[in-house]
Length: 187
Ligand SMILES: [Mg+2]
Image (cartoon, rainbow, N blue to C red):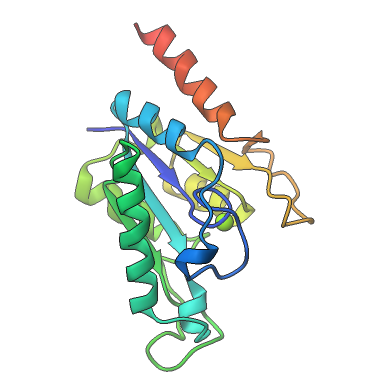
């Protein structure tokens, strides 16, 4: 069994600008590559798990999302980070056409994307980490049984209250510090 780092995308990997779907709007968050290099180095698999209801809403297509994802993963590789897989949920319970309007077990706060990754990659969720910027991320992590769930403060989401089960952080650097400490204790 392997441990993993689960990352939300918008607001964690990249700055949250609402329904980002173009390369020119995709701005990597400060510290994301440091975090991923360190996580990889310490034996964590990395997964990105992202609700993409902009697809259901017709703001952009699944193809747009995939093209942006390929570009993003290329940048991760260039920075020496290996992301095992990106899971996304294009559905929305209220918006979209026949294909996309549905209640989905993959849409956070449901834990479907995390459980799918855990099954396929044999991940020990209790020793895994999640970083999100919304309570739905934290809920998904807790619902899946992830051991530590970090809630990154997002200045764009003004009404962000703190779930008592989340570990509140102001920057990704705090997760890097957590990993550094963990490494020290284990070695
Ligand atoms: Mg987010």
